Length: 76
Length: 246
Image (cartoon, rainbow over all chains, first blue to last red; front, top):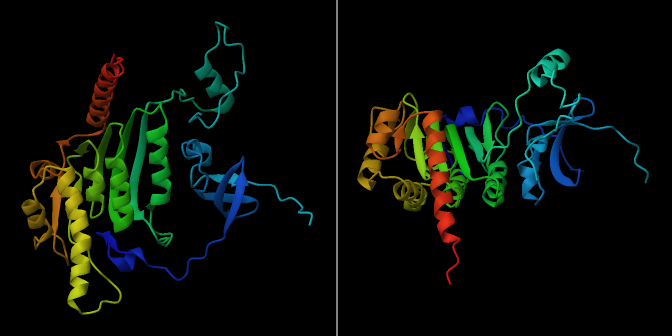
């Protein structure tokens, strides 16, 4: 990967090794997506995996938006 | 298929002559309602770093290519979208992601207009020139400079050739999608004394137009007007094409 930017690379990549991500794959309303859990019962949409193009034009599930979920018991 | 995230259910009888929806909203929610009108223009902004193969640390404001590309596919496929407006204020970023976005915009069949506000630097330059028509704000700048390399550099001629090829891909795209000549672009790329600690050139709005990189100096008004003009032109052209041949 080559970065072509006016910003110095040391600025762009600062904190590179400290970043920790809590990413999970979920399906909401039939849309498969990657979310990042944070706080209690909240998650931020990172990106959609769905192949349905209209999902990408739906602001409700735009990347960056926060969704709330209810913790439920999983029967195994 | 809709773009609206929510549809406000009618609280009162819509036929009630004494009803004022805006006033109702102010009273009930303390806010005015923006009329939900579906636009035939799809607006996309490219801000901060263009992020590609690697997740950049969180202090960067980034535009991720895996977000933009399906949106562009959606805009191309959706019959209700007739034109795409791209607003740029980017410091550059991943070469491959930037070129991918630029190629996607360039190959859309619908009219496209780019507007450079603030800055369209480095890999933002091919994105800025990728549309049918490009506009730059008077105060905006575009930094044209060569690709740099950090990390492990093996001092063999192949390293230079690799970088040269990478630069050539970017140059070819810029030359073929704008009116700038190869000589002028190379002159800007190899200029000294304009960019601190680097070679290259900082091109202001009017200069970008003079060099043939961008079509016009202007703002959002000009961008929307140009996009609407192109949409009308396309509609007229399609009307003719739909006449049966026999």
